[in-house]
Length: 457
Image (cartoon, rainbow, N blue to C red; front, top):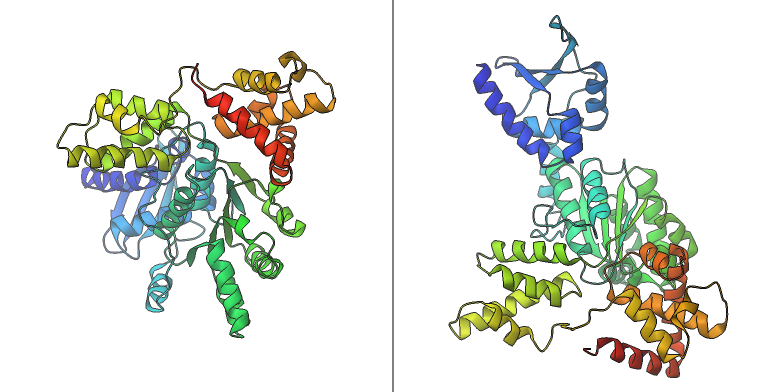
């Protein structure tokens, strides 16, 4: 019986391991021992190391544990604990849990009957989301939210440039929540569609129905929230939805191509609320992550690329994840049409006109020197505390270009350009962006600077 129970419990552990961090699994679940399972009462007794472990699991992982037991043992499983009070003498204490995992299928079935559509993109999961230094914080927070929605980071605000994986990550959260909490109403929607629905509700005089629907959501995921900037009516509706959901412990998840501080045209009361939880930036993937993404993409598609081709693409296509996937698709189309193998020669032929191949890679030092030379300023002056107009312009432009071209956080950029802080870099990027929108001469100057940067040595 014990060997059979151990095998069944191993299935439970595999599910749990996939849904918590490695550290959490080792700390709270790895040492659990299944002692007995009574078929008549459907009671599983597990041994844990201490009362504290028992209480922590009940406090933080009861729903995960309950959902796992239902999947492996079936419906109606009752859980009891045995505490190893004295490991030296083998003394144990059996206790009843303070609560039992609640049955969740009824609510999920009811939602299915009502035809509720989560609108999640099913292909985006944690399993095929590659982790690296550029997205580690965001992924860790996302997994935490998926296990305990509404109880960790609420709201979760994920921002970063287009194509870095924001949509993938928030859909992975939604899919994981649906697995662990099937009774919850999860909705993924773009800010643009939200705005269209709001406008439609006003035109057709069913605004109250619109509000009631959104206030009934348990997990609201809104992609590209910056798209409602400058739309006061839509923002006002979202403000009241946000307040209602947050007050009732419902999870809000948003993505944006910029941080809350940089959201122009957004009401201050919304920006304040965006900062209530966690704001996590996804940076452009570094070289190693780009290689991992390519290997994963090739493997998922059942393809075989030589490692030298993977390296070539990763080193020369560095804008975003979508560009990496596009490079793979281009190579496969050419390989199929011309009935040839994918090798380095084909990669250079197909991608040579579009990749950012440079003899001299762009670096912060090169950016600062290029901008400083263009404006006839000594590069060393950029590191000074001088507030002279021409030096400030070089410093801010250098920060803007570093943010645009390099796989570095704003904190790292600030540290390496004049030892400034994160806020200074954000301000510099905002200032340069404003100049680009309002100053034709500066737009021309920046284009010339970028052309100089992109020239091969």
